[in-house]
Image (cartoon, rainbow, N blue to C red; front, side, top):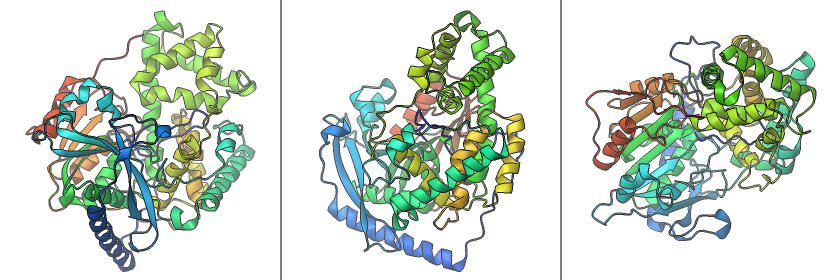
Length: 532
């Protein structure tokens, strides 16, 4: 799952599992066994997906130059694929999904098909994927000789029948409460906001669309795209939430997978989707935040924020208290601070920029922090805004699975977690609380398992990942028989295949180019640590 956090609102991406060393903190609502009615519904949706794929195979895609406002220059081409809104009714209402592609750079004989990408979210757009070729990204040079690079906006995202839960202007401009509550009144205010947001999703998106915003439907959409591309089998690369989409696709359509790489893996256990996932994510974020603080302390000569983790944490708390008392520059309060600073535990590429802004603030330069963390007032275009990404995130996670409806449970679980893991806990709780009062039927998650025809899946994961903790990769590895797990030990950046680490890069290339996997799982040393 790509990090789709808008600068003005704290988002915690909901694809996560428990740290290997952590015990389960609070029980999610257990997914019930599938009833006869639900199995019948799944059968109808499976038949509907087959109908839609057959129709798409005949129609193909009318590839054209991309619209100018999509900012995807030639030779990238764009088009649309029509899919049923509801796969149980394949001849009913159709919606359009935006797709794009760039052809393989090698010869016709070298071509091995289409490589389709999902960056995560839920709510992330994959349309930038072909730019890895036009930008001549060296990590993908050999793979691009063999594959067309294909991206798409999942249903509800961007140019694919976008959904909304609140006016984008209000989403950006509305003042944000401190995520950490000081009182029961603060909690009541946050609960009110969550209820209003859930109601807004229904009002602005409509019941018909909202109740079909699920990962299984996106997986069915992916299979229709496969057919429209003229491919009998798909090659797939999914990151973050995209790994859960891949796991569901591999379960529903195992015989349609040619090769699949999943990078930074969501724990697909049905009991983990999605309430438990977010609780476990809080633990992992706190751990990775401490890793970053240790690095900042080690580089005190550059940042002057303290020579120990405790000293750096004291500076963070000092900054947070100042922003709470008087928003910095009039616009950066605790919520905006956290939205900016949480990129450090997400991505190693953010370590230096975040530490630099942090350091400048204590050196007397507050403008750098305002520039980095203030709400982006231009981010209000409905179909490509952070509001749209947030709406899709909420709609998919809330509709995918049963969530607790008891506020006492949410309060008890998050109060206990916050005592030990305070960095993200309450912000993550408020982000997901609309699911407690969700206005459409919540589904039972797919039971991810190996199916007939599924080839070896390549799983790539760092051990200290905050957004999708390591246990998720272990769990999927156990569920997908014959898969191979590449572990980047003592590293924690989210999204491993995009980083320079020859131990990983060479195996990704070998798998995609020849189908080759190691005889056993592999542990790699970490990629290079950022330098100030």
